[in-house]
Amino acid sequence: MTVSSPSSPPQQKARNKTPEWKKFLDQFFHLPWTWRITLGYLTVMLIIPITAMFFKAATKSPAEFWQIATSPIALSAYSVTFVTALVTALLNGVFGTLIAWVLVRYDFPGKRFIDATVDLPFALPTAVAGLTLATVYSDNGWIGSLFAPFGIKISFTSLGVAVAMIFISLPFVVRTVQPVLQEMEKEIEEAAWSLGASQWQTFWKVILPPLFPTILTGVALGFSRAVGEYGSTVIISSNTPFKDLIAPVLIFQRLEQYDYSGATVIGMVLLVISLLILLAINFLQTWARRYDTK
Image (cartoon, rainbow, N blue to C red):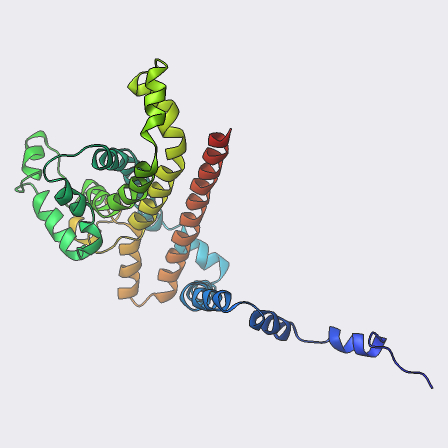
């Protein structure tokens, strides 16, 4: 009598026929509960919606997809959206770092009030922000009237879009850089000064290298927020094609025309371009950290 071993070919063959989804479920339920909650939440809130968007865009043929994605009005909207968002994010990278520096390194009357004001764009509804900015920067507004004599129009132009993007994305840079500045030891700067370094040399060679990856993180967050902004930009801009029409507004216009597939195509292009730019920023962050460790 022969007794089949546990690793006999029939049993091994049966194990190999186990469906992949069962193997995945077995592995999933053997994970710690924190992993299971994390994966489940990301799947429901992130992976499934993005996958659904891809499937909706796939209802168009490749020729139709390309025609919608590269139409002149879409290309103009991409240009206004991404160029303006990138420029405003870089500006906030400079001035947001300066604001964080002042809030951390100096004590002055009203400091707590200014510190709290930085968070105002987080709490303020974007429609209210857009209405306020459109009023202040109009030709008759407090700030817009100062530029009107020089022929510079801000509200209802691409400059107004830039102002709205700066307003809603500034806190991301300040709140990202501020904690890192608070943890930096001032003794390092004093040591550099004792060795003859000027204040500019100390900032450029001692402070900026470890701070640069954090600034890039704030710029990336601000850029992402600016690209997806709708509520304030739709009010402060004229939404005119080939002038100041941004991609989120173009998507909404497609939805108003019941062109759901076309809106999804433009949304997917926004997603891909944003992802590529964020990957490039993350690459710069990694490079800066390696440079700093050297």
